[in-house]
Image (cartoon, rainbow, N blue to C red; front, side):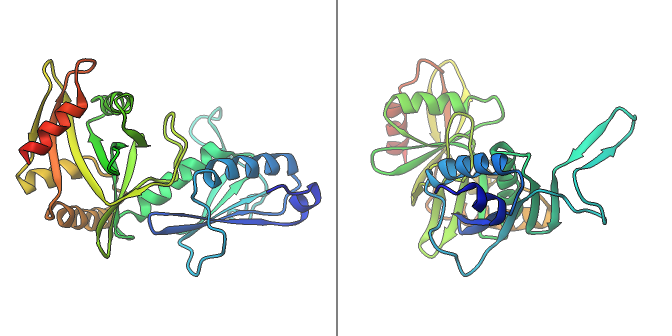
Length: 287
C-alpha cells in the first residue's frame, strides 16, 4: 500500500501478523521520520505481506504489540537514551523498550533485521504457553506435502543436508526453526514469520512430518528411533526454551507429541555422497 508523506507524518498504520495461532499488532505511529517510516513499511509489506502472514481485518484477540515511534520514553526521560556502562567508552544507544510483557516500543531508526529478531524472541517467549514448541530444524517438504525435519547440533550439517534434499526435489519450508503446534486434529508443522539465512518467510502448514536426527558419517545409513524416551530427550535438546515455566510446558507438549504415531529416525549422512530419496525410502520401509 502506498501512503502519502502527509499520511506517514500524521497518521498511524496498523498491521496484523498471524502465524502459529499467535497474532501480533504492528503499529507504525505518527512520525517526522517519514523517509525511515516509508522505507520500513515498504520492506515490511514485501517481506511479511508477500509471505502470506498479514491479516486483512482486525482480529478479536491480539497476543503482542510492536509499536514504532519517534521518541523513546523510559524512567521519565524521552528521546534517544544513551547509557554508559563499565568504562566510559562503553556507550549503549537505547532503541527498544519493553513497555510490558507483551508490548514493545521500537525507534524508527531500526529496521526489518531488528523487527525479525524481536519476532523470534516473542515466539520463543510464548512457546509452551500457546500450545506449540519451537524446534531447531531445517525443514523440507516432499511432493506429498510431508515435512522432513532435519535436526542436528550446531555445525552438524542440517543446512547442508536440507540444501542437498532441495536439489533432489524437495521444497524448502524453514532454514533454522519450525513451529510444532497442537490442534484439534493432532499436530501441525508451521513455518515462522522469520527471515532465516537465505530464506524469506513463506507461510506453510503441513499435518504430517518425519523427523531425522543426523550425524556426519563416511557411509550413509538410517535407523528408526523406537524408544519414546530417547525421542523425547533428542527433541528437547533441539527446542527453544526461555524460562523454567516454559520448559515445563514445552516438555509436556514434546512428551504428548512423541507418544503419538510419530516417525523419527537417526540418519548417518555422507555429505556429497548420499542419495536422500533412496535413504528416506529405506527408513520408511523399516517403519
